[in-house]
Length: 141
Image (cartoon, rainbow, N blue to C red; front, side):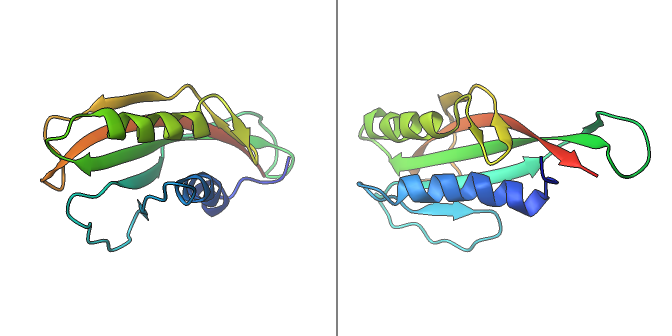
């Protein structure tokens, strides 16, 4: 397996979501460190990828050894407030299906959690749910 690169892992996660959300009906996707001004009464998705602690899988020199890289994808789904959760949950299901227990380009996704409704949306004025997926990849040194 080729060496895992943090930006390659992030790109794999983000490309999968961007491609799916561009399909009908298209919904804007926002990633870390991207400015975005949501359109009132619209739906959109925020994708936040973070990396946690890893672990070594083999001792030895700095070559021919491996590390496990673990992380979390948090997908915030925003939809119109006051019209019920149905449309939001449809988006959440589509997102769950993208990552739920699949392997993509060397990134192993665990079972997805959610969509879970949040009591206070951030930003305000939307109904917000959240899907969370842990993942791992192997880094070859």
